[in-house]
Length: 446
Image (cartoon, rainbow, N blue to C red; front, side):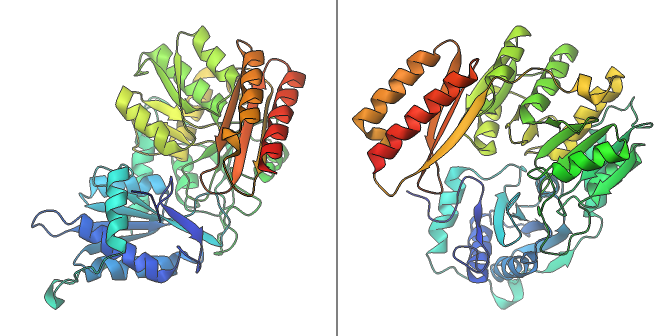
C-alpha cells in the first residue's frame, strides 16, 4: 500500500494547503485516536508544538479530532520534539504528537506521531492510520467525549531529564556558551538547562514571534552563531533547529563542527569508556568518508543507512547500537532518548570539552573530511537512472573511485530530483565524477 499522507518524518507541508489543512489535522486526530484505542482504560494523547504561527490552528484541530473519538488530551505548548517522545512514555500516554516542520520556514508545518514507547510510529501503524483517513470514523457518545487540559510543568520535566544525561561529576562552571535556539521549541529549555549546570549562557534565537522560526538562525543558518561566538569571546556555540532534534556546534574560532565530527567525538569517547554498544555507530550514506576512516583506526565500525533519522534509528534498534545520527546534525543517543535530541547531544559534547581541558577547536575536530560534492539534477519525468548510458557512466565512476572514494546517487523522495554525491581524496576527481554523472542524467532526462 503506497503512502498518501505520511512521508519519512510524519505529515508535512505548507499550512492551509493540502495536506497541512485544519480539516485534515482533525481527521488525523480522529484516525490516530481510533487506531490507538486499545483496551478499556481511559486513553490519553500528549501534544507539543514549536513556535510557528500555525501551531495554534493545527493544535486545536487535532484536539477536536482526538476528543471527538473519546481520547483525553494533554497539551504542553512549545516544547522540543524529544520532550514529546519522553513525556509520552513517562506519562503512560497511548500516543504522542509533535506539531512542527523541524528546520523548515514558518509557513510550513507538520505532524509527527510517537507511540506509547516514545518511538516514532512504524510503517505499519502509519499505513493503518492513513487507511482510516479515507473512512467514516465512529465518534464517541456524548458522555464519552475526551477532555483537554494543559500541563504547565512539561518544560521543567524535560529540563530535569536532559540534565540527568550529563555526567554527575561534572559542571559547566567557567564555560561561556552561546546557544542559538532558532526562535523555536527550545527557546526556554536549552538556555535554562545550560545555566542550571553552571555555564555562562549567551542566548540568541530566543524571541519567537510566530514567523521568525529558523529565519537566519539555528542549525541550518549558523552564521549568526559563528559571529556571536567570536564577538563575545565564548568557548563554544550550540545551534539547534526549530524543534530541537538537530545540533550543529561552533568552536571558539567560529568554525563549524557538523554531525560527522560530533558523532566521531561521542563514539570515540563512549568506546574509550566501554559504553559504546553495537561495536560502532550508525550513520547515513551522506556521512563523510573521513568519519569512516577515523572510526576504523579506532576499531569502531560505521554502518550506513538511507538518508533519514528514522532509518538510522531502525538500524540502531535492530543492531543494539546506542550512537547514531546524520551529518546534518540529527544525533540519536539511545541511552538517553528515543529520538534525535540536540540538547542531549550538546551536553555530551560539553562533557567531552570539560574533561579535555582544551579549547573546542582542539577537542571537537577529530578528522579532516575528504572532499565531498553534492549536486542535484532536476528532471521532468521518466526514470533517468534506468537509462543504459547513465548506468554505464555510473559504473565507470564507481570503478574510478574504488578504494579512494564513494559515489552515492539517490532520487529525492519528495520532488523530481536526482541527487549525485561523490567524495574522495582528490577534489578534482570528485568534481569530474559528479559532473559526468550529472551530465549523463541530464541527457537521459532531456
